[in-house]
Length: 248
Image 1 (cartoon, one colour):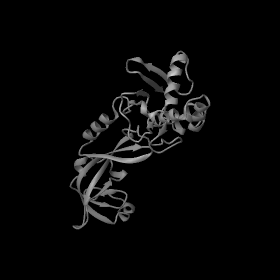
Image 2 (image 1 turned 60 degrees about the vertical axis):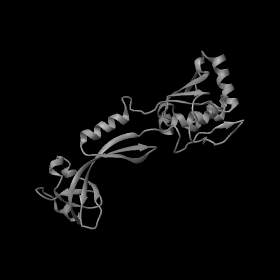
Image 3 (image 1 turned 90 degrees about the vertical axis):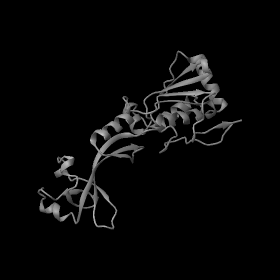
Image 4 (image 1 turned 60 degrees about the horizontal axis):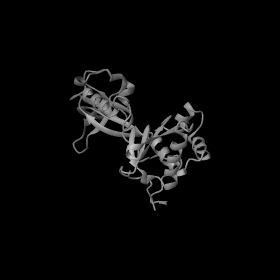
């Protein structure tokens, strides 16, 4: 059997299991208009004025540069700050921007018009556990026959013994499927070094040395990289776009 799409075997910046965002946080920004022909711009308020409530920011004139803005009406601005803000404008709206990270890259999730609305969005995206989509059910077409035989033989003969390879296997007889619990996720170098004292490359080599088929190692890695905890291989489940499919 040959894969129609080859999944990466080593550390990668993407995985089809990735869902949601890490490190969700809220940034308060000022939507500023200036000079008639210029599009609006967004700037954070300077730290010296971060204590000002929204109603003392919105619809007030401001000074700004490429990095921050300062309300210029009714506020004391030190000379050194005044000199580094060459532009003037008007704060039209206070925006609460929700930002998140995926594989250490910043992503703009959305803009809200109050802190409460932004906090509600963050709460919905985080869920109570702080993680999104930690259980997956995918087709057995993502594993070649040799890997499927490995799973069946391990469960049949070694069900009472742990693998010791940061994943454990269990049978799902009703659907003729196989479940896998991933341990110590995500399998990034930083996380594995902190809990196991070794990078992913060492873990992968241990898995291969123990006889784990490489195709299974690759799938488990991509799932663990996205912090998946439960992965189920089911012959009746859907295939996952972007993951290797093995055909006869």
